[in-house]
Amino acid sequence: MTKPTWRIEKHHPSVMTLVAGTSHRILEISDAHWDNKHCDRDALKRDLDEAKAGGHPVIMIGDFFCAMQGKWDKRADPKQLREEHRGSRYLDLLVSTAAKWLEPYAGCLALITYGNHETSILAHHQTDLLQRLHQELTHFKNYKGHLGSYAGFLKVQTQKSLGSSGGALNTVIAWNHGYGGGGEVTRGMIDHSRTRSQAYADIYIGGHIHRRNSDENILLELDEHRNVIRRRSQWFLRSSTYKQETGAVENDISGWHVEKGRGERPVGGWWLEFQAERAGTEDRRYSVRFRPVPTWA
Ligand SMILES: [Fe+2]
Image 1: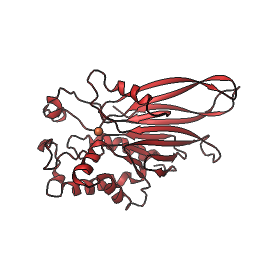
Image 2: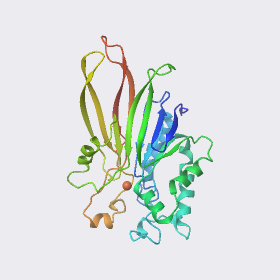
Image 3: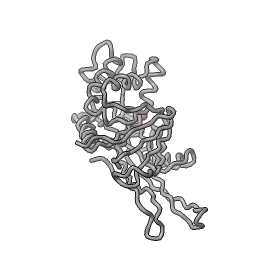
């Protein structure tokens, strides 16, 4: 088990800096729908255990909670309600059981941000599930995470070399939980094109439609000081869910998702891996290389 050396600073609800320390990997996940009976908690635990073992920070981009089983909710389905959430204090139970489940990972959680399932509870019931979860997590002394808005910018500072204290390089991540339905044919890929015209960043991360895909874009730009053309890489990443959608896990393919003609979805998110390197023998300046690696399928 590696002791975490990263830290996160909150400047505003939508502006954060993650000082990566000696860890050059971040686990990015979304749409855990942790309280849904069909959440694959074994997979979620496996990914969080990997982050914990390596001392890597975790960022969760919305819909950690599903919160659809309240008695007011037309979408409620007894097959998706867990035993521990039965009773008259549904929303309270979501918060207390989630904090308890997350306790072993409290030291890994860097950033938790809102998804539409959390903002929907806030809008309809005037209670903020994530704020309450965050409050519970602060009782664990190794928790040093922050809550973020639905969308925002996360600046990642990568050290030039492991163990060195001098010099860090910035990579800017734009996060947005997501929107829309993600068509069966386009699979949300056209949203990446929309995103390009809305915010400027090195890496774009989102979730919401329960798909996992990526797209790399290369921009050419002028290095005004050296009068040479430079390639700049942009990554568009969509993390999927931990919810098994169709009920196939119980050999019972039924429910809202199935009746809407939607299929089973991937489980998991992305490892974001950074490495600072000199550009070459001619150009000794450092730059950050990046690669996304899917969590185990
Ligand atoms: Fe969502």
